[in-house]
Length: 263
Image 1 (cartoon, rainbow, N blue to C red):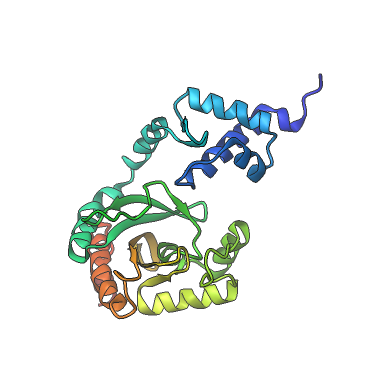
Image 2 (cartoon, rainbow, N blue to C red):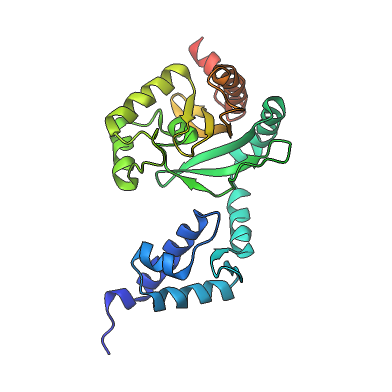
């Protein structure tokens, strides 16, 4: 029997990784049928890969729905990566203090493969929790941390990312025009902070600020995510000032002091 390109070992690995990435982006799990349709993979092939990943502990299958979620084995892998991210270790106490001050859930994100990825999260006190997690990947056009990470990239690089990842209309307020997005990044550079004004999730407003490790080089982004009742139009600027001061402190720990450089 002649092996086709889709049957090759490399194709199987590509499919397995694509399935893991798609499942990682869902907080409610994904079924075999949903994966098969979304990734254009034969259902039998998807089923075989899912069973293998489940057997190895990388996935868990929910008994009631049959949907798959990430398993603990993935967490073990991510710990190995996160342990080597010095910026995460440096930023964590500052992020915790920021959350205590504002009472709003905080995140630290980096740019990876053209996407914003949470590498740290500190929950706000209380019973209401933001449905986010370390390792979550997000598009740069609809999130405050994404805008913060992209604000000092060359325009050609930003446009390349937007072409590759698209500009999904997450809500009626999502920016879907590259030209308008580049204008938004100009505003972020001018103000020193970014706002996701219900652009990624209805009812949620988020503020992001860049963290620098060199002149106009963004190493990471701080984000505070809350409801529109927590992060109001009237208190965004005040919250952003707290965040910018925190970002400056982290930047100094990374070896970059913007005040000194301007002096």
